[in-house]
Length: 318
Image (cartoon, rainbow, N blue to C red; front, side, top):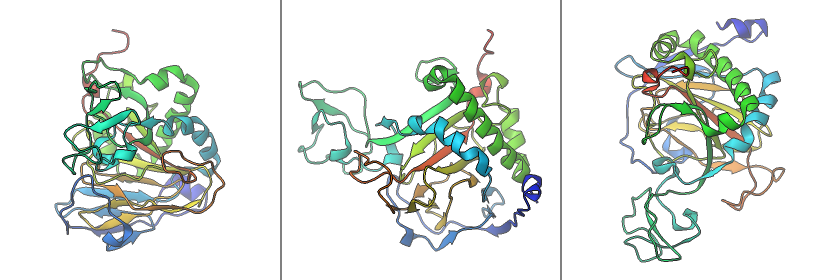
């Protein structure tokens, strides 16, 4: 039993189940709810056939009195438009690619020549070719720290540098998530702490980096750049609670989906294929999203993880 919840007269009863793979999924594909044999709505631990942890699902892990402050700190970052989520954003769709693209390279102008492409180069209106591949536009930001990658040194993410007060609030969130992680899956918590660097952590937590998503239904993908043999965490916050249906976190090869709602935390192996089910917004209380033409649902997902090489970074004082 989790001591924090006992104080609130809330007892977590975690069921333990074993799961085996039933399906070979195709990366960048979307999987609707009908694909899954089981939807999990309660706190539960799931193990793989080899005994490794697949997921630890904890309902109401984030205290209600803290959620609004976290949403205020996160929202504008999570709503950032980006075109670099690759496989997670699905197979490239022309009307979701950059508006200044007049023709997809090696295509007839209506769709990519290779229909399985998730990131494409494109020809600008002036005839020049963009050298950097881009994928479907989604809403996603980041916070925290990066290890040395793409020729850049270990560093604090630009948003965190420019928004120190909001960064500190996210450190508080990570510490709250970390407590749930430590209490319910201490082995992976300690492993990640042992591979971390104290100068590049989000507060006193085992996470260096946050990916912040807003109403982002992901296609089947495996997370890259995080510590091998580690577990990531997914926490949901909602601008308006129960303003949407669906967007469950699915593990399509295991044919199970988890109904992660506001305040819930899922500790899971993000090196397994995962994706979201379809999302239905239930009201027009929030503004229209110009990416979809529909009202926002207000779903904010926070993925907290440890970068793979963050432990090799030099001290901030060096």
